[in-house]
Image (cartoon, rainbow, N blue to C red):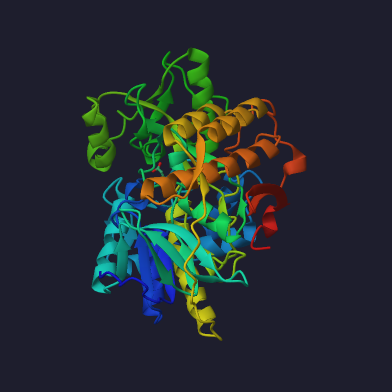
Length: 532
Ligand code: SIN
């Protein structure tokens, strides 16, 4: 990997170096594009490396499973808001995407001709491939970074993307970045692909690493693109509970443990999910996370227990979880594990079509930052690495096809410094955790919005922390506005003042756009949620 000179003109600037970003960058470079990857930390600092369970994919060797069944599970988990056409194309592209990743050198568990499979919540078949037991994301990131080095991909690490630059016609002309000292630079390019990952930094406790600060939502909104379904933040049911004072990244305790027989019990020893859903502890994630939250509330407890002691060789099969448990004095093979839900995955995001195009000419998005219609109101476990692989490749192929046509010269003017609302992060996270986690109501959402506003000052964001805080502030307001407008409970959006699912909202995706300084919330048909 090498570093570009300032002012370098690229064909494609990729923001983010996780599964979607690196897949896109490698695809684009191999298609002959001059690609620069911008990443605000080290290239391996994103969420991909922390993914445990695996990649959900139908490889054709599990009797009874099919893409149609995978699609049915995805649609069922997604609470009426999955776009089945978009979802089908993504799921059907899974085998080729996994084969390509293996071609980059990724090694999965099992025999090369017959990979091992596990199950996770909401899946009716064994279809999740995994690596290193519970270190799938680490293997995916390792393989893609090794390929990036082999291909001498140009990576600008330690630079935060502060603004997508657009011309008078609204089309992308480049990207403004800030280095660690807050100095601005411009990368001129006719195509920018956002692959910035998630939004866990909106909350006090999350399974995400600290780089997950909603940067892509803010970059897209300010460039004129729409967000959709952003009220649906998935809380993982089983983050390791390491003490009441925990702030920041909570170690994940993979759902694959339940797929292989671990059971949830409350602190009085009762089942958490009995009578809640026919799939019990392996119900879709929104159902299990909400059940745990209710049980914790009813018992005044801090956590529930996950008992994995019945799984043979559990520490060898799940070495990452075993190590996290050992760090707090818990032996995965002998002790129940204290767990509680934590913010995990954004089901919505920047609206794209099935080629990753946003509504802004020259702006693409892929991976967790994007809303393709695959996840609806609640993502099916392990569909996300698959989506990153498929959509990263597709978006880059589309950039290459687009740039092969008549091209405009990307020659961005130096951007004017624009002040933004920047909230103090700890206050914002406290407000979002209180008002916009599992179990929301109108008063709590309004109070969170007021608290974020009160914690904000208006200034030009220059340092990485300020750029992140400005992104979190805009993202918080977008999420709160969408969550306030959806007066029902559906998927990951649980309203205590509107506990029922309302047919009026069946298939209605919320949308958020920024006009001037104001966010506007609307709705669109989830089946046609692609670029308007
Ligand atoms: C897990 O391993 O439980 C997380 C997988 C995912 O979020 O898809």
